[in-house]
Image (cartoon, rainbow, N blue to C red):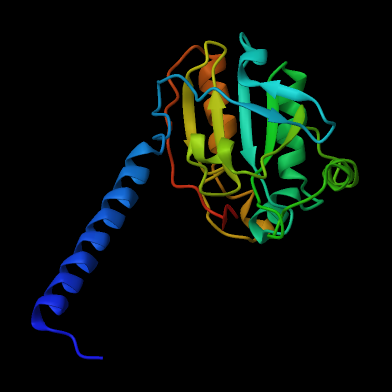
Length: 216
């Protein structure tokens, strides 16, 4: 079948129009995505389902400091901080919750990906590792993770009793999967909590998170 120059020109024009439209749609979608909260701004409001089937919202914890920990039990960097000894993450959780701080462990791994677990498995991990979060939130859709801009496991956030985001970043200063490095590192979470307890601004409010990419 033969095509005239006019037909070829029309076809090329239509293809270009389709490409431009697709590009505009992609740009529009990107622009519509919520920007992660900035330090000092209100933390993103969210509601999630816990491993015990409870519905919890950030608003439920108004008046309390909240720590959010993005986690994935298959990630070597997460395994580092849950290794026993020294049980670094478990110790942080127990210390925080004993001070009436709410600790939310968030699993944003999509179904079929590393770190995705059933509610029963999530509870088993909490028990067998001696972990002590206030709640484990199963964020299969990744909606909560995207609201905060969580990039890695672990990725830590701290929210004040007034609902302000005051820390966003790594758990500590040595980005490795080696357990021996825990004792050598500066722990940004405990330092931020000490600043808040002293009524001071958080000295290190942001840091580059390290670990495995969140499996959205």
